[in-house]
Image (cartoon, helix red, strand yellow):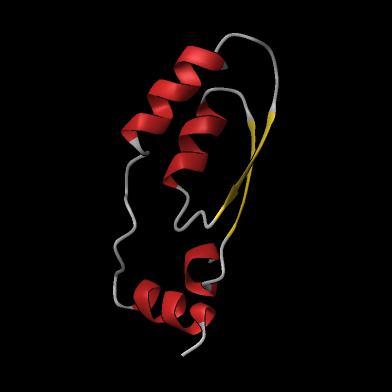
Length: 73
């Protein structure tokens, strides 16, 4: 099975992706980037986009790609 097929099957089955942003990412971004001006963020393997939503809410230009089309939809 190819990796993309694996992640697509995971996504269709409900996957292990979070509905809420990663807590450690929130802490890291808060310490190093919040309040320091605009930035563009690219998340590879973004899943359903929980981290991207948090980043966009904080004013970042947030972009993501994922191998599973189900997550991107």
